[in-house]
Amino acid sequence: MRTKPPHQGPRTLPPDNPLLTRLRLEFAYFSGVSWLRGRGAGGAGVILRFERVRPRRADPFQPLRHREITPKFLDRTIRALKRWKYQFVSIDEVCRRAVTLAERRRFVCLTFDGGYKDVIASAYPVLASHAVPFAVYLPTAFPDGVGEAWWLALEQVIAREVRISLMMDRSDRRFDIRTAAEKYQLYEFLEGWMRQLAPSDLSGAIRDLCTRYSLDLASVSRRASMDWDDLAKLAADPLVTFGSMTVNHPALANLRDADALREMTMGRAVAQAALHRDVRHFAYPFGDRASFRRQHVAMAEEAGFVSAASAIAGIVEAEGRTNLHALPRVAWDGRQRSLRAMRVILSGATFPKVKPTRSRNV
Image (cartoon, rainbow, N blue to C red):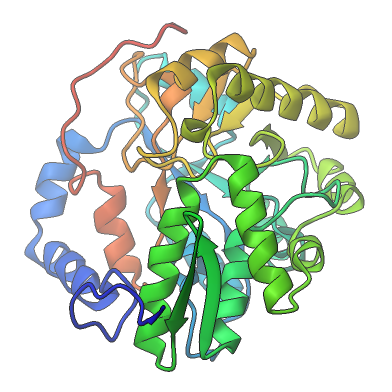
């Protein structure tokens, strides 16, 4: 049966409306409320989470644009953070400051998830010119050339087709996607469905889709990812810290506990062997509340990681009030270009109050 993408109300923009979000943040900036609240909410500092850094594109269909920033905006961000008197620190220093008394100046730590090629091609020249430390979290199957960036393949298939069909729950589903709005709706629907699949089912689903529409999944994945030669160049810079992000980048919540622990320990072992350095830090794949559970926080410590970073928004508190194996990070929405909005977010005033939980690493 041929259908249109599941309807979720009128929409001309991707799922979140960045214009409304920006207006709310701009209002908070000019109202001054964020500065008053931020004095008590600012914590010790903040970890920024980025994924892709590349020049802006004109494509009408960009469902992953919120995960991208431009090199120019990265440069503006670093310059602004320096003006705002933030101290740029490594993830190791974040862990130290999280369990000691608060210091006078707040810190910022820059982190990049996924090991994308953009990091060395577009981000690193900016980062090196400012001589700031940063961390890269790697799913090791991708520099090995065997990872499957299914979210990128899904984007490319939907972008170039006007109708697609695929197997969902043992039935053949067909979708008409002639307009940009329909493409965004279908991407949101299928990305959410695929995120919930077990790894073997997810791999089967995306391979079936790519076979039907003659897309080389392996090539898409390799082109988007750094290889070990790229990573060796970064490793020569003492300001770069490498962290692990499992082997295959699965949502840990979709795995049995034994398989989740194996992904963690193997990812770390592969990265250490390839990079010839201790890999002490971890980031949960996807990192939102739906992708990992409380037991995975304990597993990260069991696997020997000093810290584990989520994608759950928040600030890092001092004196052990932030769990080092559930570190919050602020993911900057690449559709926003307002430094004023960023300053409101970094103030901590927009985050809900969380009951302190003393870290076991004090």
